Amino acid sequence: MSKIAPTSIPRRGLLLVMSSPSGAGKTTLSRKLLAADSNIAMSVSVTTRKPRPGEVDGKDYHFIDQATFEKMVAAGELLEWATVFGNSYGTPKKPVEEALAKGRDVLFDIDWQGTQQLAQAMEDDLVRVFILPPNAETLRDRLIGRAQDSSSVVAKRMAEAPREISHWPEYDYVVVNDDADAAHLKVTAILTAERLRRRRQVGLTDFVRVMMKDL
Ligand code: ADP
Ligand code: 5GP
Image 1 (cartoon, rainbow, N blue to C red):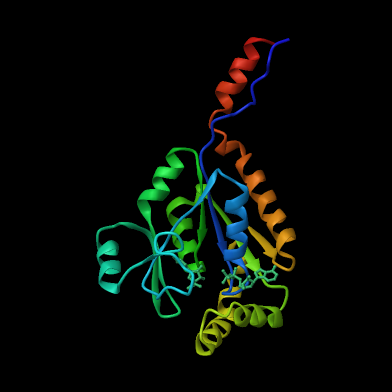
Image 2 (image 1 turned 90 degrees about the horizontal axis):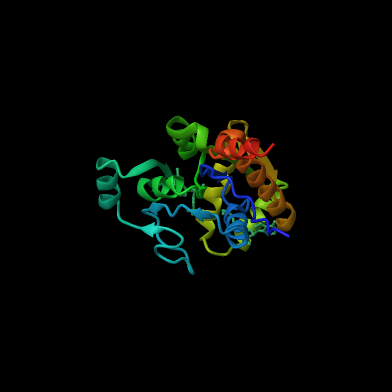
């Protein structure tokens, strides 16, 4: 009996963006996705914000100063950038281009401003997911419960939530993060379906041609 190898059709990588008001759970859902799927890697942003307790430079963010940030913008090294809560954030271009070329997916935890810029630059590669909290009280509880920001920072982030939430119609998918495992399953389903889009499966023509020869 002949052994049948698993079918693998070459495909182009995709850019999965998760945005939400601060505290809705996109970091939590990103971590779950990265742990469960070896074909997607996190885009590590640069930021001028100070590290939170436990955050690791080079893993959570590249923590840089404003002068370095401005140099990167001037040199064209950022794919998108924005000011959020008074700090500068941006996505380094090179790792994203390298991943896409290898057919690997990239996960972004960026805000609506960055998502709009990515859509202008690379709309065909982009999959936009907006994460909502189940209700306002839960959002406040999660921001406070994270216990990593001062009460004034929590208040600032809560005050920004309505403006951030108002951008949900610009996203392809919306997931309410009530139970984290259920929300994770939904994000996984989105990723699986988007990988199967015909235009991303660039090896389909050859795959079908080879099959046709034996029919
Ligand atoms: P964001 O990255 O959107 O700012 P986080 O992922 O840091 O949000 O989540 C904020 C807080 O809420 C964290 O303490 C996290 O552990 C908690 N959290 C996230 N999702 C859930 C959930 N589904 N149920 C309960 N707590 C959650
Ligand atoms: P935090 O300070 O909580 O890590 O992130 C604050 C906000 O900045 C979040 O909405 C997050 O999605 C956004 N953000 C993080 N990195 C980037 C980035 O590289 N570009 C843009 N546009 N937003 C980012």
